[in-house]
Image (cartoon, rainbow, N blue to C red):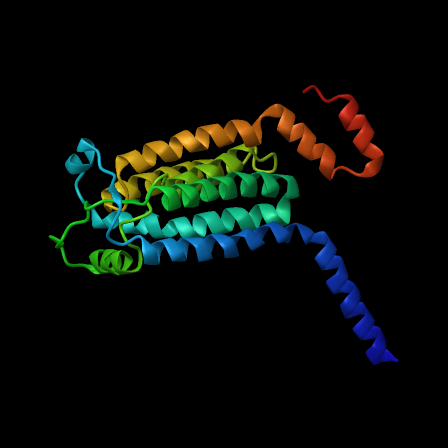
Length: 241
């Protein structure tokens, strides 16, 4: 009898968790993105349009920017995880922002294969940072570059942090996010991973998506959808489209 009770309790906990975190379904998009991106990395290797601006040649290579560049993975992952557990509405907004831009990037790279030849052939310094950069160059080809997802997603996470009601009074958190965001943006050009053109197009796409995802009407509609049925009519009554 005790065994069955424990089993029922465990099943009940699983059901409750599955219901509470049912919004995890949207993360299944990452499977599509990774598969599509891997395909592009394998097929776009030699024949592509060269994306370079004159200013790219004036920007020096700096291996130390590998640190914020790699911190991008943690930055985005922590941002998504935080809002997943703390605020479902902000989680949906962040995912809408990130995943829409990532899809645009995949479509652009498929229709208009692109790349550059900005990477240095040799490194002036030999240290652990250059070794990490060398490893990065081996894993990530200098193709499929614009808009820069490193830049775009960093902007998206920082916007989510600054727009979050839960983090409204967390000035240190916002400041740290801003510094890391800009460090990641700069790292893309100082590591010769991206052209300035890729950065500009990422900012342009982020500006468009900010309007789409965070405008007042959208926020109210999304809040209404997430409300209890009892409160839904009251919210819609006060909605101004």
